[in-house]
Structures are given as structure tokens and as C-alpha cells.
Length: 161
Image 1 (cartoon, rainbow, N blue to C red):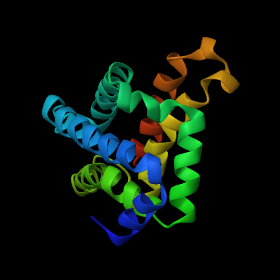
Image 2: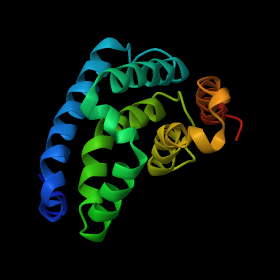
Image 3: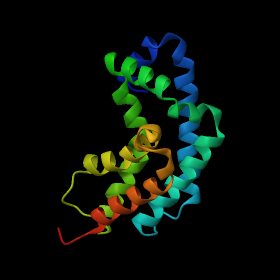
Image 4: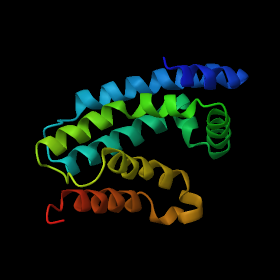
């Protein structure tokens, strides 16, 4: 557990237990997804399957579902950011995806001219869009997320750049 994470966790008082449970549940979700998805498939297929599994489990798990509670999420993010803990949380949540990105790059499955962090940011932007579905227009969901994944993956697999 990183010092940034510990520092951020201490500052949250009543939220510390929630974050601890959330992280355990999220880690279990990641392990489950990695076991269910064939990581050797084409990146677009892998990402789509992972998004579908993630969405399904997040909706069925009351702890993970709270991540989509905008008021709670904004408060947690603000508190962690102010106390330096957000970096530790992000590192823990993104480690598996960074490995996958590097693997795809090494096999020539996605563009290598973009930094790993930029590709990760593209992937991480998708759940934020879902969090803001009310402002965007609920009638466009879930098709909007499908298109976002499709367009991101088309851009990442376009090797002519």
C-alpha cells in the first residue's frame, strides 16, 4: 500500500472503510474479468467484453455501484486529491490495464506512437461518460458507450498514423 494511498485513506474518516471495501471489490472484479476474457483476442473485442462485464458487475454490486453516485464520487475524489491519495488509488486500479496496453503494443495490435498513459486515459474516460449520462441524454445509452469504445479502438488500431 503506497504512502499516498495511506495518507488519502486517513483523511477520509468515515469514508475510509467504504474505500477499503470498494478497492477489495474492485480488485476481485478485475481478477474475474481477466479470467473471463480471452486477452489474446483483438483489442476491440477484449475492451468491449471488459466494459460489458464491468458494467454488469457494477450494477449488481451495491458497493461498486456507489462509484457511479456522483455526489459521493466527487467528494471522495476531492478529499483524496487534496490529501495526495488519489494517485495511489489510480495506480492500484490501473495496473492491469497498463500491462494489457503494453502487451498489445509489443504485439503490434495498437499504435505505439501514443504514450501508455494517454491510451489509459482514453479507456478511463468511458466510465466518466456513463457517470454523466443525465447531462448527455439518457436516451443515448448504452449505444453511446458502444460507439465510444468502437471509435477509440478504431483510432488505436489505425496503424497508418
